[in-house]
Length: 401
Image (cartoon, rainbow, N blue to C red):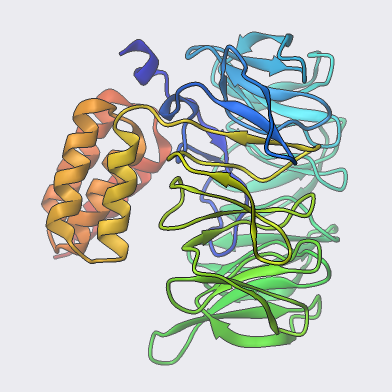
C-alpha cells in the first residue's frame, strides 16, 4: 500500500490538443507500473532497473523512483544521482527540473543544484528557456534562473522552433522568444511546432471541432479535416478522423494507413502504436507501417530516445482501467466502464482511476457522483492536482445548476 500511496508527478509532455493547466500531471504515475524495462531498436531487452522508471534516457540519464524518493540511473542501471528528490523530471539541454520540499528547481547532470528550488511548477529547458510558475501565471527563465519573459498566461509550454504555445482558460496561441503573441489565441487545442508546422484545433460555428496544420504565420498549410493532428517527426505526423490513426506527410497525403487506436511520433525510425487504447498491446512500427517490434503485454510503451525505449509493465488493476477507457470511448458502455473502474480501484487505487470514474459519471449526467469520486480519490491522494482541478470545476457546475 505504501508503494501505491507514493504518487509521483510525471512531467507532462506537451501533446496535441492537451495544453496542460500545469506542467506537472499525474496521468501515468510511475507507481502504476511494476518491473519496467528498456529495449533497443531491435526489440532486445537491454536493461531491467531495480527502480520504477518515469521517463526516457536523455543526456545518458533516466529518472527513477523507489516509490518514495526520486533520482537518476545511467544506462548500466546504476544510480548516478541519488534518490533525494520528491520529483525528478527528464533532462533537457543538460538540466532537469526537480522538486525538493514542495518547490521546483533545476539540477545539472552531476546532480548539482544550479537553480535553487523556488517555483510552484517548472517545465523543461528548450532553446535556452524554461517555463516556470510562482503564482497563477507562467514566466520563462534562462539557465541562470533569471526571468526573461513575464506573462499573464495560465498555461505555457517550452519553446520549439522559436515559438511557445500559451493559453488562458480554453484559448491558445503562440508567443515568440520576446514574449510577443505572434499567432492569436484562436485555437481550442494545439501542439508545439515541429518541422515548420503545428497541429491546431478550432471550434466551428456549430460547436464542431476540427484539426489541421498551420505555419509560423498562423496560415493553414493542411486544412482542418482531422479529429487529432499530432506533431510531425521524421517527415510524418499521426492523424485521426475517427477511431484509427494514420500517418501523413507534409502535403497531407496519407502514407501509412493503420487500424491502430493510439499512435506516437516517429523516433529512430520507429513509432509506438497500440491496437485498442493507450497502455494496451501493440508495438513499434517502421515507416512502411509494419510492426517491427511487437509488444504483446498491456502497459505503456514510450517513444525511443537515445536508442532505447521504456516499457512500463502495469500493476494489477491497470488493465481494468484500460478496459474501462475502451468501454467508455469505443462502445459507450458507461455502466460496464464504472464496474471495471471500481474493480480496478480495489486492486490498485491510482489517481487515473478516480479521474476516469468521475469523467464517466459526468457522461452519465451524474455530477454529484463525479464529485464523490474526486473526494474519494483525494482522501488517498491529497496532493493530486488533476483531481483537485476536476473537483473545483465540478463544484462550479453543480452550484450553477
